[in-house]
Image (cartoon, rainbow, N blue to C red):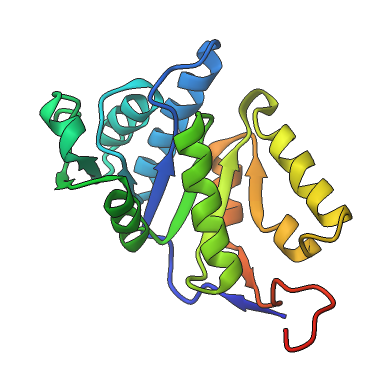
Length: 201
C-alpha cells in the first residue's frame, strides 16, 4: 500500500558537497538543478554556505528566481562561509540542529554528489521516511553514475535480508533535474514496516 503526497512540493532541501569534485559535470548539474527549482517556483533549503556545489546550487537558484533559505552553523558563519544574497538565513548551534531545521522546512530532499556529510544527511532523512516519522520523498541526482555504488549496496542489503524491496527502491534516482523533480512530485511513501519475518512487526 502507498499513501500519496497530499500537498504540492513547495520547498526542497538539497544536500551536496562543499567541494566541487573532479569533473565540471558536477557543478553543471548543481547549476541546472538550481535553475530548475527557480523555473518551478520551488524554494531551496540548504546548508547556507558559499562553498563548492552548495554555493553553485544556491547562486543558480537565486538567479532563476527561487527563494533560497540557508541554515548555517554558528562555527561556519563565524568563519565567513555564509553565501551572499540569500533570501533568508538562520544561524544554528550545530549540525544536529541544522539538519532538523532543514528537514522541518522541506517538503522533499535531493542529494547531489558529495562526501560524508551529504551521504549522512541523505540516509538520515531516508531512514525517517522508512520509519514513518515523515512521508517526504528523497532523491539523488545521479551525475556520472555517482550513486550507483549506493544503489548496489541497498540491493545487497535487500538480498541479504536486511531491507524490504519497498525501502530499497524508496530513494529516487535520476540523472537530470527535471526528471528527478517530476519523479519527486509523483512519489508515494511505502507503508510497509521495516521488520522482516519477526513477530509483532
